[in-house]
Amino acid sequence: MPEHLLDDDSDVEEFNHAGATLVVESIGKGRRPFVLLHGIGMGRSVYLDIVSRLPGRVIAIDLPGFGEAPEPARTLTMPRHADLVAAWLRRAGVHDAVVIGHSMGSQIAAELAARHPDVVAGLVLAGPTVDSTARSIRAQASLLLRDLIGERPRVLWRGAREYLRGGPHLLRKMRATIVHEPEDAYRRVTRPTLVLRGEHDPLAPADWCESILELIPGTRLEVIPDHGHGTLISDSGPAAAVIAAFATRL
Image 1 (cartoon, rainbow, N blue to C red):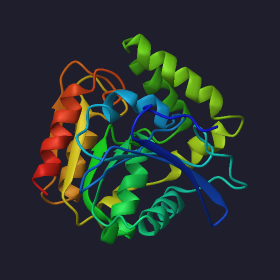
Image 2 (cartoon, helix red, strand yellow; image 1 turned 135 degrees about the vertical axis):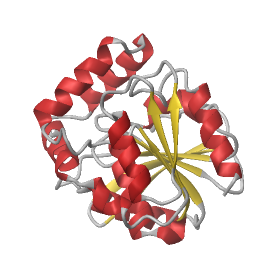
Image 3 (cartoon, rainbow, N blue to C red; image 1 turned 90 degrees about the vertical axis):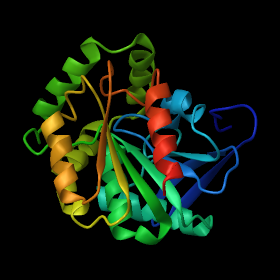
């Protein structure tokens, strides 16, 4: 049986399309949904804290090969991930989503907004990766280790569990993330955009986040004090408040 983020007012389904499967959980009610896309090695269960804090309807997704979603025959690129999410959104009749992408999810969210703007009302890039000056597995692993040293125990526990669930293909999934150049997608984004970074996030350094502002006109940058890369995972109240305020202005 599929897991639920929350015991009440929650519905979980599998969606199969073009040889890959999403697990999608819809929680709560509201006119304009928040769509949550997780980071590398993660899954929707890691984001219980922010799901419980966002107002209205939240759609939390396990991407193929993560969380409860089965491993696809071939590792998906970031654009193919975006196409898969867009296919589910259209089938579900969602055409005005506030798409929240965390870490790797930010790359998919940017591709979704660039390739399928008809389903996106607003874009939130939280802890956006991959910094153009650190595009190697070694560099990203080093930055991740730096982040984990000061991270909260809840983040460490949830992250470790989901990395183990990510299975033996995690390395090739990391390669798919690192070879992607999100700046190409940023140049094509026309939807209102918010960039979020934790004050101490080494995977989304300040200069990289500021460069996104130049690529997507009108983008705002918000820095969450005393947080690292896991700003949406633990103690997410400040991030949730900023995202909710952004959504009300769309």
